[in-house]
Length: 237
Image (cartoon, rainbow, N blue to C red; front, side, top):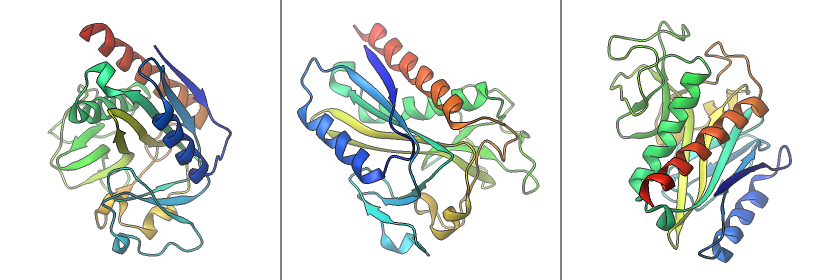
């Protein structure tokens, strides 16, 4: 059984990170899994493999070195973060399979919200959307048709990132999760090489022509995550 809850709006990153670690360190074999939804105030987070050189100009935004995988990303108002605190051993889920599950849910949610061509990019975790003519969204190239199933990949260089993921595994249990850009000031992404990729464009749902708020998108994201985890458990037990 997995439940979800909203944390207080604009909850500081450090406090939420500490709460995730404490939850994971003290959980028992029977502890139910949880999904935490939150918006953060502006913050850059640098993963365990993160290189400070990918922070080009942090300005007055705090930089937090954290324990998730990956490089540097930005969290801020208008972005929903789904922190998944799940027991992978209980779900009999390998780490790679878990990453695929998160990416597939991201694609499913974007497709459900009307974003065409959401896809993966080889070697670059996260969810991407095609960029055509520098801003014409909801258009796709010959590699993929609108609504094509989750898990598809594009090798095209003209992709913009709309969702980032990072995870940490401790004693077989995962925390951190998936961040989806809804309607936010994207300027701070220009102060970093997002996820360690120079020149990577970052967009949000508003840029894709979808008018929605963080609360609405968060509920859809949580619902699909709960369905994915619940379905997985039903299949494997």
